[in-house]
Image (cartoon, rainbow, N blue to C red; front, side, top):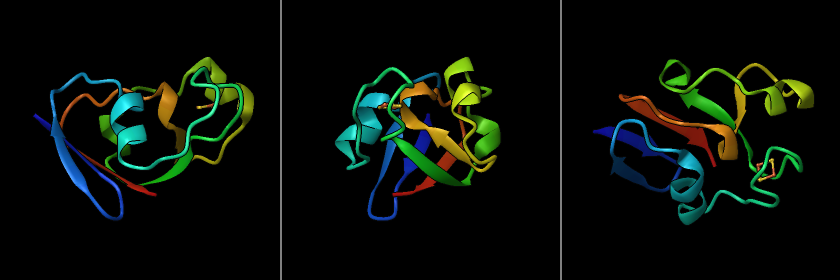
Length: 84
Ligand code: FES
């Protein structure tokens, strides 16, 4: 199991889970769900190594190195904490 944390909450989810649904349920704002709008960009405080590499959509958006789009992320295991 992996652990996903926001500033207010943490949840255990299966390894390999896409974070989109969990992050949205935990209060991260979403818009397009397709890596276009940038609404779901958050700073990753812990566990960047437990996420998939940035997608082409994220590269195109030129977001900061310690930030990720939650609609583009899958957690491989371990713990990921975001500032949200
Ligand atoms: S929800 Fe639009 S970029 Fe993630």
